[in-house]
Length: 286
Image 1 (tube, rainbow, N blue to C red):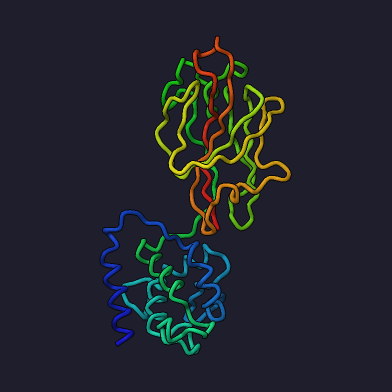
Image 2: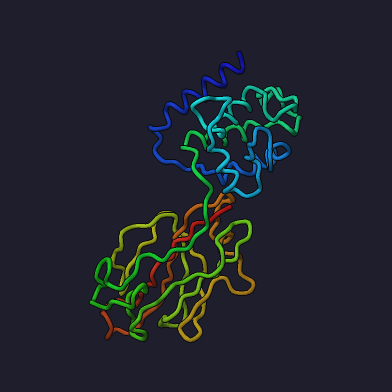
């Protein structure tokens, strides 16, 4: 009866998948579970040739999308949850599929782990997150005009009174929460300081003083930095990693960055006295 109820719940939630407002759970969230609980049998040449516990998330995800013999018409990723719920996987581990009954057996999945895999399936069995860094929101006139015709160079922010090319925000390193090497660098800035900030959403460019703003949602002030030769950097020695300062969750996600700076010349694009760089979109992997 327990198995029937669990499988019925899975079937109902999958049937409702198309009504979900937004897909959020990716394979990056569930891959560590498959590694920990299935890795002893499904890493290389695994049971049935199924290697969902492979340490490479892209390889493991590819395996999860193969056709299942256990649950015809579905993927092996789907069948994995079916087998977890009916107690036949992890194999020979003594699990029943009921987290309460299986409590204390480290080989079995907890209720939270089962729920996360169910969410991944309900959200469409999305692939792993691939870290990336992409510029957006240029003030070069390609999207919307800068406020006083002060277009910057291609890809940069709107021009300021010192640098006609405009402030340019770039990144180096890899946006991976577990091994964050990202450094944000803003160049061609006027004034003496700049402010790096992060949002969890982007919007169509809107005029903000002498520049354009595209970062919105839940906004985090990353840090204020002194400029050297019109350049500011985050992090500097002693600073928290960007992912830590921005509270990027362990499973990763997409965050948006810009840099605000002063442009005190009232003779330039009056009466405003500030500007912004272009934006950077970072897709953080776990």
